Image 1 (cartoon, rainbow, N blue to C red):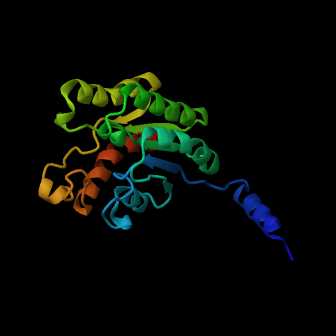
Image 2 (tube, one colour; image 1 turned 90 degrees about the horizontal axis):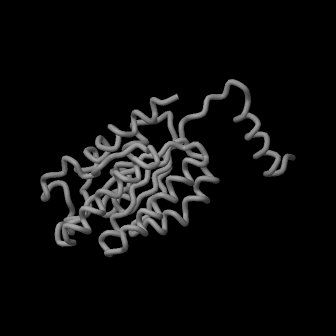
Amino acid sequence: MKTAYQLLLTFSLLLAAPGTSFATTILVMGDSLSAAYGIAQQSGWVNLLQQQLPQQRVINASISGETTAGGAARLPTLLQQHQPDIVIIELGANDGLRGLPIKEMQKNLAQMIQQSQAIKAQVLLVGLRLPPNYGPAYTRAFAESYHELSRRYQTGLLPFLFVGLEDSSRHFQADNLHPTAAAQPILLNNVWQQLKPLLDKP
């Protein structure tokens, strides 16, 4: 009788056989906006993306409350484990809502981008914005961080995840921060517009 290790090795060899076609692996590193906070998991935009791409593998490593520091700390293990072809980084909102230094957020996001590119993964950076009560200087610097990082590291960029979410009663939960299930197809479409060019690259 084969041991579990021998069975795993046999399975791995079969996967690696000549002519085997591997699906693209997409790793999503996000916070509650990608973790389907407050709604059914199957309704979240990441799960909808998996449904739209049945031949690909979509791994949702998003955690509600995640900061860029937390994402940067978790990413190396996830990259080693999953070897993704594309990494979608949707982080920063919790840094901003806590008023953390913009430079620290940029440093953490830059680290995640560099780690992903080091294994030849393409990166899609998903931008966010803060409420105006955080002050014009801070909110402007926050939003511009995504553009600056995208230019510096030549990544894909979705400047603002919430484009098209204009009906607060329909598109946002009672906290006015987290999108409803009805908003998820719109979020998916926003991400898809910038993700598709990366999937089309050889």
